[in-house]
Image 1 (cartoon, rainbow, N blue to C red):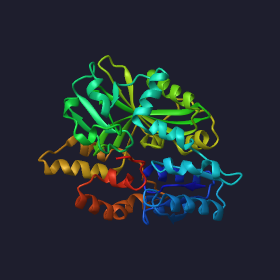
Image 2 (cartoon, rainbow, N blue to C red):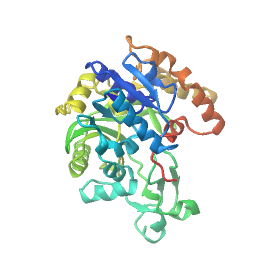
Image 3 (cartoon, helix red, strand yellow):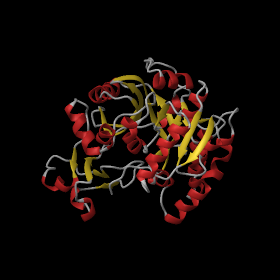
Image 4 (tube, rainbow, N blue to C red):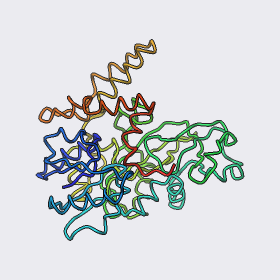
Length: 374
């Protein structure tokens, strides 16, 4: 089995889940050193060129790994899925790839295309316009807006403005969207689907953020309206694989889909290894009520950095410290401890680069594998 990214905690969760079922796990990763390379669950880690640097070489490397390592199952993990999907119809006989075709993935990843798709299928969404036409088409748009690149992830390029008239010249083109800013409660969903049917969905809310990415999160029962929205999109696209959504509540408390991430996100960590295997590999439907792995989860080192930062601002942040030492870590395992213990050393060069470039770590982690347009 081949995972096409190894740097993220969700990669490690997938590797451990499938290793526990007897799979030989191989990881293809542009980084030489990464989280999964430290894990006992990974049999081999192979460095490949990043798709944003040389796409042809990247895809050729994956094809070579599939052939030489006798891979029968390919699982794209995160943003690299947009590139890996190009190989879906070029795989040798007997090899399965657990993702959608590239056209469907791009449609869901594109924030404006997703908005249109959601509207067509009755999924509540905030008002959304292309930035190049916003000034002539926003008579009913609320004053507070969010401006986003249509193709982005991890909060890259997102900014908040008081009026569409404050758009910069760079933003006034069809590569950006202007969206009504929602101020209600927020939550995220993560689902596994097969052939247009949802196998399992979990919802969670953020407790601690590192930049625009959640590093501590809490399990939530799945609201009926969110389940309906997820089911509608999955059915409309005949979706198979992992898919995630961000939701926010409007002034009436109705959940609206902000954007779609057709990939794994932190919600995966709430699923036990058995549930991951049954839902993702065997496509067996699992009841929504299946107990989560824990009520609260965190990435310890990122949370530690966040609560320490409060000290430099002169704040004790008691709740953050208390949560830090009472919440289960997503990378820790007694039988596979190196990924947790050595994670900070592995990521040290990237952390230094982030400081020098004044760029969030979350952005650097996705920069070489993300499907961007600006």
